[in-house]
Structure formats: C-alpha cells, structure tokens
Image (tube, rainbow, N blue to C red):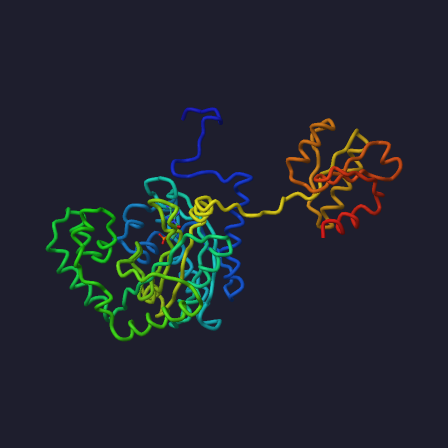
Amino acid sequence: MTTLPVSTFQAPRGTYDLLPPDSATFLAVREAISAPLRNSGYGYIETPGFENVELFARGVGESTDIVSKEMYAFTTKGGDELALRPEGTASVLRATLEANLHKTGSLPVKLWYSGSYYRYERPQKGRYRHFSQVGAEAIGTEDPALDAELIILADQAYRSLGLRDFRILLNSLGDKECRPVYRDALQGFLRELDLDEETRRRIEINPLRVLDDKRADVQKQLVGAPLLRDFLCDACKAYHEEVRELIGAAGVVFEDDEKLVRGLDYYTRTTFEFVHDGLGAQSAVGGGGRYDGLSEMIGGPALPSVGWALGVDRTVLALEAEGITLELPASTSVFAVPLGEEARRILFGVVTELRKAGVATDFAYGGKGLKGAMKAANRSGARYALVAGERDLAEGVVQLKDMSSGEQAPVALGELVATLQAKLA
Ligand code: AMP
C-alpha cells in the first residue's frame, strides 16, 4: 500500500463534512424536527448503523432500487452478511420486536430517531451517499388519527423552521384486499405499453413503481392508466377519508396525489410525501406512510403501523432556498482575555467556575496579545469579554466589557459569577 500524505485525502464521493458554523443550523433542524415528536409521546430510539442485510431485503423489498442497487452490503470477517442501514423503519421495527416493546407497553409504541443513512446513489445536489434523517414510527395501532398525527407533526416541524414553500402529497395504496386487484389491472395496462426490458421486468415484480418513473416518454404512456383510487375497498376508502378530514380540520393543507407510490415496498393505505418547490430534482424533503404488513414480513405478529422520515440535509437546503437564516444564539456568552502569565492562571480558574455555573465561556488560548485575543473574543460572538491584567487582579477585580456597546467596568472577582448570571439571564 502506498502511503499518501494526509492532505490528499478527501471525503468519499457523495459525502460532505458538516463544519461550524453551518453545522449549528444542521443541529437546530434536527432539534426542530424532533421537538413536536418529543412533545407528543414519542420516545427516543437508537439502533445500530448496520443490520443483517436480509432485514432490508425482506423489509424494504428486493425489487426496490434501495435494496437492489443502492445498499452498502458487505460480509464481515466472521462471515456475517450485513448492510449499512439505508433507512430507519425496518431497524426500528426489528428492535421493537426484539425487545417485545409491543407486548410490554401499551400500543401504539411511539418512537423517534435521528441518525445517518447510507445509499449508493448517483450523487447530486440534495442526494448524497451518506445523509441524515429524523424519523418517527407509531407501531401496533390502526387508527386514522395516528396517521393524521404524524402528518400534522411534520407540518408543524417544517413551519416551526419558518418553511412555507413545501407541499404535502397524500395518497392511499390500499390494503391486502384491494391492492392485488388493482395490481392485476395495472399490470394488464402496462404490459401493452412500449417499454424497455428493465421496466418490463418491473411490471412483473412491482408494477406500482412504474407509475413513479420520472422519464417523460414513460409518463406520456401512463396517461389513462388505471388509478388505485378507483379500486380501493370500502374499508380503505373510509380510512383514507377519515385521515383527510382530520388533517384538514387541523388546518394542514395537502394535495391528493393518486400517482404517489414511493420507493419502498412496505407501504399500505396512507402514503404521503413532503416536497419543497425550491429544491429542483431532489424535491422530496420527507415522506412516510402506513406499513401494516411489515412486521409479518420480518417474522413478527400483525402490527399495523405508520411512520415518516424527514431528510435533514434537504431541509437545510430548503431553508437556504427560502432565504431563511435560523436565529441561533451564539454558543459562547463570555470570552476571557488574560494579560500576562499570572493573570492567565487566575482567569483560567475563573473560566472553569463560570462554566460550572452554567455560563458558556471560552478563553484566549495560546498566549495571544491583547489585539489578537480581542479579535478572537469578537469572532466567538460572546456578549461579554473579561479582561484582566496583573494590576486588576492585585485589586481583586476583572474588567467586564460589553462587546456590543464597548462599555467596560471593573467587577470584583467574588461577584463575577453572580453578576454575569444576572446579566445573561
Ligand atoms: P425515503 O426513505 O426514500 O422516503 O427518504 C425520506 C427522506 O430522506 C427523503 O424525503 C429525503 O429528504 C431524505 N433522503 C433520502 N435519500 C436521500 C439521499 N440520498 N440524500 C439526501 N437525502 C435523502
């Protein structure tokens, strides 16, 4: 192996590093998306970054792009067949079943998660090989109010960030009664079309996904295709109508989109997608739906469930597209500037005291001169600088400088913590 100098390494294709100050926005988006969930009875779950590859093959579906083309699958030295997780739902359900959460607590089991996901996709703006989602799953209950709750909470999350230019697309994919009837009808229609080999194969494995084909020549031929809407059984129709009414009553605006199928096989009944109109090709900022059959597909009991995942990367891009800058408080409130060796030792102790008292404080490290240190204080965004030289300390004071007004006044060392706490409160 040739050894390369460190500086020649770059982040792998399709990935990027989150760096300050932008990373603060990323954290704030995660926080904003999860806040409505934490406020609605969802408990936090964390699962491993990789799982048995079979979980995704069965759960997400062999015929999906995610499993057939985009999975980072590998064999370990011990011979285990694993895959980096391409999505969250299958893992969360696996963990729920493994820990028997559906038996020990009341249903639904409501969980939220936040983490990294991996898909070997063709990278472009908004589409990465490593991306970040915040997701929610409500497991074990069939109740249209639960579907409505999740859609309303996602809407609330986006609105709390100030986003306006997003739309909610809603559809029902039917259940195991009516979907097969529709599937047959659709296959009959699709087999008559002029399509390439791969698409023809897809007709036989997963015909609904042909409707999702983005190519214009395919879309043209799809005009007049049978619509699932016309095949829904009465139970599915009533369920869907109830979901629509509940979200409408909550003041959430949505659009019926009978072509919405989504790229994962496990969905039944309610499916929805959040799209943002400022993002170009990768416009889906989040999506989800009901997956009543997934538990049985991975070996569990019948557990009708519903969930969503919102993409953090694309939500950040949506903020940029709408020109929204989140108001994030500076992470440092106080910046300490020592003048001289003795001051340095004493002021470092003061910094530790302030931090213990909950005041966000930073220090001019590296023996900078006054000018360089004040520049660092400025950059930190701190509201106050503490400046202390030998003479101040001999008098038992430090100079407290208000960084916005420039005013400066001595404060006794013993009163410093209380003074700053009061000023910052
Ligand atoms: P999905 O699991 O495909 O429904 O994705 C849910 C959300 O995750 C999407 O709406 C995107 O916001 C985000 N997402 C999915 N794949 C990617 C990707 N390759 N890069 C960035 N975000 C993604």
